[in-house]
Length: 300
Picture 1 (cartoon, one colour):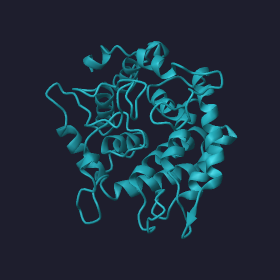
Picture 2 (cartoon, rainbow, N blue to C red):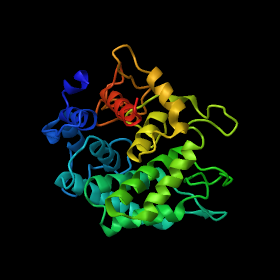
Picture 3 (spheres, rainbow, N blue to C red):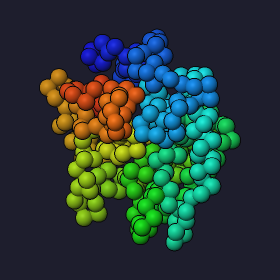
């Protein structure tokens, strides 16, 4: 925690104080170098000169990072960036294909937008309530979501299920929407029934899931799953214990945690550039912060 409290990013210091030390932080989150970069280049319409979903420079991805860094609700620049995102989602949701009675939708997109909207104080906005309603309409019988048109309908995608669980829980908590809370709980049950990373027969579904990442964007990994479950007060479920054990084993001697091979490329790269260089070498602050948050909520 001393390492995190010495971070150059006020948001990291603030989140450490709030979530690990139960202190009231007084850092100016908006003054941090990462937060400033995430807002850099914003245009009068709220966007950033590219499509909202453009990897990883569009408003959608910037907003997820800003929300995770604790940018305060009502922040005008964040609300301005959210406007084109909500407009884009309203139009896109009118074209969701239904095959064999199941909506083929990337729930991760609307899950992120729903969670961000709630973090920024817009949970009661009718457009945001509509996001929650449609996610519930599109939820598969097993509790998840899937955008694969070729999927047989027997199993949802973990990638597409985790973030709707986060968004629906955030919306239900903010508004008292019991249907949203129930939908989030069904999604969490799907993940827990697989111990977060095991197939029905016990094999590891994807070994990349056992390696922490930051940012995760739409990708699934067990640290992000544990983080969402901790926000839902479900991380002490016995079925999460193996993933927690592996998380503890992944720390170094300090103890700190490093990120796996990133999904992003440094700013200026020709393919999938980021706005921020999140530091892919050595221990990473946000991965360490999230790991410590999870372990604390799990009572470890």
